[in-house]
Length: 186
View 1 (cartoon, rainbow, N blue to C red):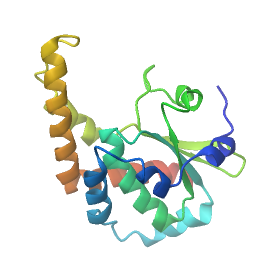
View 2: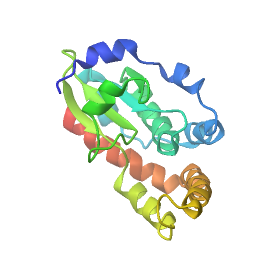
View 3: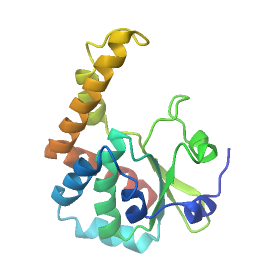
View 4: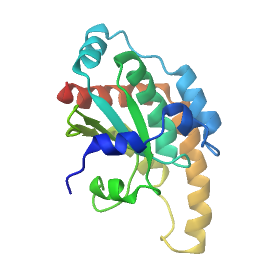
């Protein structure tokens, strides 16, 4: 499906509006935002600002991956002057359906687009290093659908959130992965 991202951008939330919706992950989201330090990358940020590229992020406040990735992207967007809006996955399913991952509504998805509203690059739902950490944490899960699974899943989600919120090396990997994708758009 072809989507005009300018239309979705106009419907989106600013970072400040999105952050007011945070509940479970507010503390960790803010911890990452306040503690993540961008590398000295003046040429990259100047090129990004000069490109005029904009972004729409498909996310949800309850999502642990969004908790980690959005504050990092916000820092990039601020420094690189990427005007950004956030579209809630569960509210705007038509947009989400255009950006499914392996047939699933996995978030976050960051879509970079030009002034004509056409996609020029897409990042998400996670950096390779994040996937490896998630696989390790979820390795010994009981069978999906069982009572044990539901209980264990809640425990593992908390463990992942704490891991994501405290792993500054992972944050830098995510930055590098996002930067690589942004470079394809500018």
